[in-house]
Length: 274
Figure 1 (cartoon, rainbow, N blue to C red):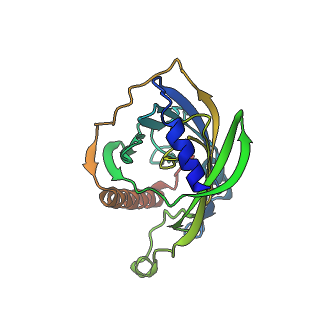
Figure 2: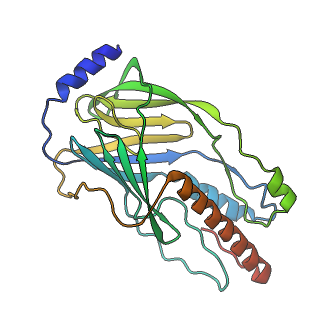
């Protein structure tokens, strides 16, 4: 089966796609939200957070046969008022988050916005050990084929803790044990370009659907020659950091945010989360 798909890939790779294409994806993430660290949080606030976290998010993938740009669709939020001393939180990637992928070399340049600052994270991705299952299904007007791979991931529980923890609790808190997850990716040779959303690419055709643990990505539209076109160039704005450095910075910023939230709460108890 794998030999068959690689034969197909060699054949369809000879097809020239000079024009730029655009695919739109809807991403839904199911999170097991843990509010145990916030026993005094009002139920309506907790419900609002859960609803916001469960809302689908749309992304656009602009690509040709050589490279792609993947970014979140811009969406204007309704104006929100804030009480004096209150805090407001938004969930999801910033509007300036962009992933550029070189489809041949598997090099990705990821521009990340974190608390108003831009960072550039460069990655050289390894090719997954694809298993072509032979399963097919219709996704929109395209016939899709399934390929899977397994990887170790952290559990999908999402902890919301803004209170100040004791040193003992911080010392006792351990990294959760990773679990083995089978990632299912559906692609179509009808569009013979090895592009896909985020890190899901490198197959004999465009990726149309992904099922990865608690995350589902579905392609809702493909435009062969979209009116909207962008330059498929790697982003250059931001401080260059490694994955490890970026994760450390993010953890430090989240700790600062928790401390600031706690201090404001002690002063006037007028925090707002939306």
